[in-house]
Image (cartoon, rainbow, N blue to C red; front, side):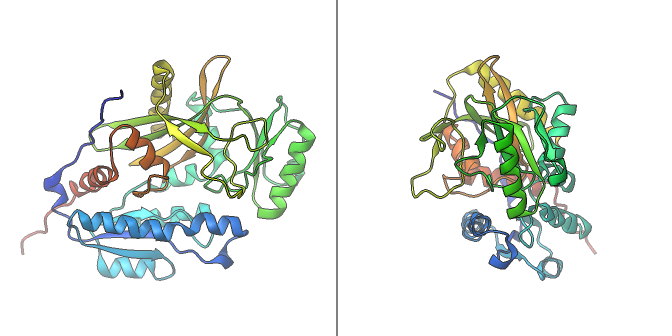
Length: 348
């Protein structure tokens, strides 16, 4: 049995918070390229309300702020002690979400989640993989296709998985995302580029177990939690991976604690290194595929502001729950870490 992990919570610091703001994505169907992309982001409104209730349960005053055209004006007027940043898209574009940390830093308002640099890196899979390679953190071979002029055959062996260079939640990955030939991969690149108008990655598909790692910085240490993703079905009848194609079935996977302690330790150490290398902060999620030939975890994705909320269907919440850490403790640890930096007002 895995021992319960206890996060660092400073109750005295928590009492300093007079007003906490929850910023979340403003979602309008017209801003998104596809219905699937819109539906994937729409859930943030309900999740924000759940986080607001959880903060209120800690006896802290809280207020909601959609990231629309009034966002900056609203936070400047209210001057919250801390902004819980749940924004992962602006005007339907994922890479623009880094504007929220930029605005808050400009206004000198503290916020949770990833800083500006980490958000820029984490929302660009090509840049992220270049950084991982620089720090000698394993990641599958890949080909970056900025536009269709560079859509030539990869110089590595199949199978391949074709994914957008940006976009959370596996957007664009359907039941047939894994391709067995270069020609099939190139055809899929064309389809994704035509549908979304974004650069694309063709990545070597590592056909082994998939792991998810959560790094949570509680102010005292980088706490790392790793679990195995156990799939309930093979979307294409052959390979295990997460498809975003609607099929009317229950969730296609569940998380379980790992039985291989050595692999878990290796993955944990790599996640901690990747967290620092990619300039992430507070918390992040990493997805890895394990090559059965040498038991090496290869990083296939990094999410610097992974979905934050109490719902057990969210990876951060579900995985930490496996280690005995529930959302109220996660939230109290996050808020109190930032509250410690709040200085009392100067006496006049």
